[in-house]
Length: 243
Ligand code: SF4
Image 1 (cartoon, rainbow, N blue to C red):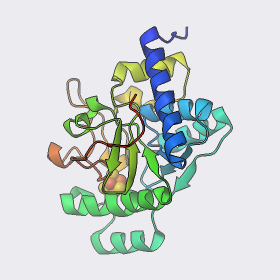
Image 2: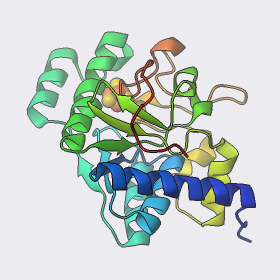
Image 3: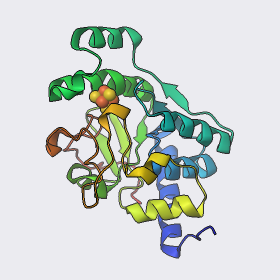
Image 4: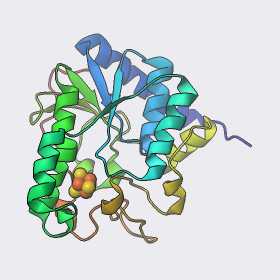
């Protein structure tokens, strides 16, 4: 039987809607970088149901799990809408793979960051060009780096506002919302993957491990971000109001 949203979660969802609506009113062009993780199911539902002016894109790095592609299809089918899919530049990718090999990310942090730059960062930069704010589904609980975030920040690196409406949601909140709304989600979550990225760089975690422990698990924890969420960023002084 479907769960009902608790009053607290209804308030949290309403705060997300308010934050996103205000972002559109204040910035006009707002885009959501959809990771297709479980948080993305919540944000896609809220955006397509309540704030459809926000554009949505996702990045196909070329190394995603088959389950992730299937989820993209299910998600689009449920809402009868399309998510823009952004790809790495073919020539740049060709040069990278030719020079460092197809799986060089296992060999050094530098090679891994080079792969993330070509397959994720550069497509991301192309996708956000012309927008005034971008939306992300990061939560404080996920890592010490993300714990330092603010719901609205000036993203110095990319030159636009960054809106994180789920920052204070717990993992339990996210799953409660997904079940109550009967949203689709990636079946890999049921197999121990709290965070899902590229197939070769993501593994299931053990009980008690950090939610991000399955990402680039062979590296030291401090290096485990792809570059989209740098450590220090000043809060927005004149940005949209906070949820
Ligand atoms: S997560 Fe792995 S495969 Fe995906 S872009 Fe980064 S290094 Fe490359």
